[in-house]
Image 1 (cartoon, rainbow, N blue to C red):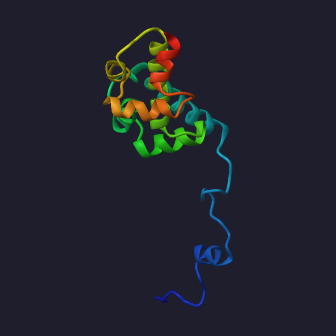
Image 2 (image 1 turned 45 degrees about the vertical axis):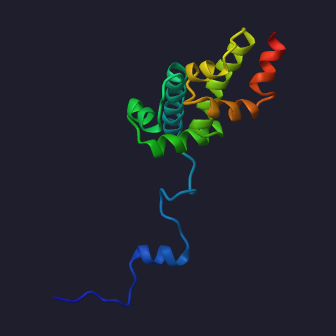
Length: 143
């Protein structure tokens, strides 16, 4: 029986040395249309779930479990498709709801923050402060 010669490198070693990329390596090809559609569907399903349940304390694990996809994969797809992370999208949904209710005459910012899905008033105020004007100012303008 002949022993394997070490003078000749394997094809994978040659590819590595020459810099040739293997099929499927990151950045080598664009995703197929069917794959792009599936990715978009995951993101649309995630958006629909978040819009439906944004008032609940919803974590990434809950979202991934509901869509039968890993949280890491979902976060990566969501950011690639929407250019924003899931938590920012969720906070925007909550903030939109809260600001609509403030302009509608809701007075207690703490109760409003809790009913909109924020865990406490202190999480609501910085999110709202990053919008055009803080919640107290919106309330004054609505009166």
